[in-house]
Length: 298
Image 1 (cartoon, helix red, strand yellow):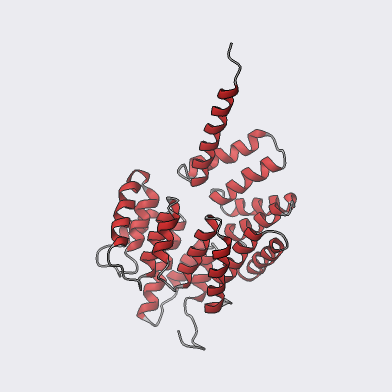
Image 2: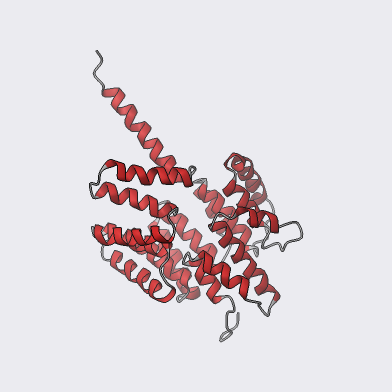
């Protein structure tokens, strides 16, 4: 896009990046871009917003062999997200596909592949997929992956690259907040201000409210954190990150066990394959095993 040119998809992109998926869908259905490439990009965000809402059927039914190459990878992501029993096979297919000749201009394919590897906790594979791309979204996912690996040093370098490319972009600002939260200390307050500025600009969403809640929790401001999370629950009672933060907050504030157990049950009902539950179950097993080891035999 040349300097001074208006981005027709500005509102759609920012709605998606800030987690306002219904607004993204509404805006995408209203707009008729003047450029064919922009029309394809609009549809990419539309289908990704449907996936975020777990409306997998729309994506499966509407994306076919004749769909644009940028859109087609989203059907694989829909299959992966909806069908836990097909994930192993799909991951193997994706590994084979990404080890061959890949169109590096198809950033959606790279994002889908890396997202699947990320969900599988194969962070090295995700980074390999994202490394060749200079697309801002690919950089943001690369940064997230590095943070997940506790490589704050490399994440900060990636943030600098994003800032050099587009310092004002919503994704770059979000990436700055993620890095700030990981760095801790005085940076936590800076992260809070970024989320607050976005809420003032784009409206509150579970994604932004969870970011704020994380900053509050790290600062020991549990009452403020609970307020942000309650608002997030009102907007989406099934949001996994909100439920997880509620579990953490309930335990840190010494609430009755049934409170955190309730949120845990809600998470299991809505997203039984969530990585948090896998880790939680493993820790429970480790704890039970330790108790058994030290149990006094009769």
